Image 1 (spheres, one colour):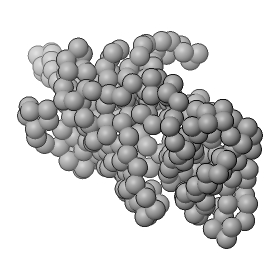
Image 2 (cartoon, rainbow, N blue to C red):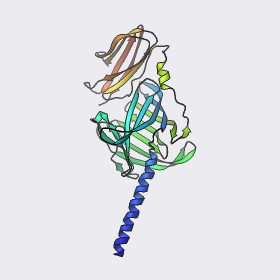
Image 3 (spheres, helix red, strand yellow):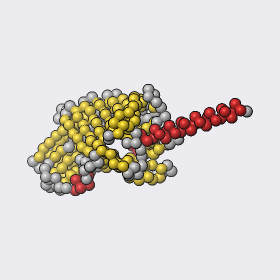
Image 4 (cartoon, rainbow, N blue to C red):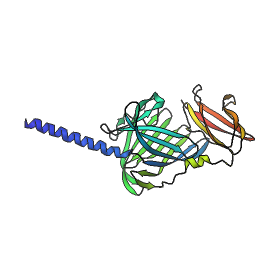
Length: 304
């Protein structure tokens, strides 16, 4: 009887320790309403360079159609008017973070798995959406200085075909760095500052996206598409300072017209449009904007 009681006691102590460990690990990804992260985003590749500020904010909590409660997260870009809405939830019992992925027929996928240790292969994939499922490798953990304080960190990585991701989670901060390399370049997210549970860290001066997009531009401009590389859709943004007949077209590298995306008269302003090349094979394509006398073209890469 004493042995049995001792056995139960050991089990309870072990379970309690495991639960506390998972709760502590969840501090590496602090989801709470009002928490905000500001990143410097840069894309450096063979055909050019682009940078902007990305602001990610937890807006609210809401119960969706599957009767599960999610954090509603808005991701805004300083260049362009687009806002991406994400829905994520915490499974505190198993140490998992789920994302509701409407692009995958509304199914959930695990984007963080805090149940393992360094060297483990985890059942999570943050960046690959509906593509081939690739498990994440728990690469490294340690302590370094973030926002003038020593903090624990975890580094994870995964790779598929010709794209490689490595990202860093910092305790009580969240994602502090993302590195993505592909055949033709590198994309990086570097955390500038954040607001976590009412406490400000780093540089939290962000551009006013709504104000910026309401301003009438003073020059013609065609932006680099985003994301790039893409599969199968990407967004192209452009601005025109005066009303013009606008034509936006996509060509292959031989100069053959693939798709006419826009062909209409537009008022002065900032615009964006989505291009879908799902019927084409992987490769380099060109997109050209003609507005009045202004003509500009850029390259983009479809990677399936």
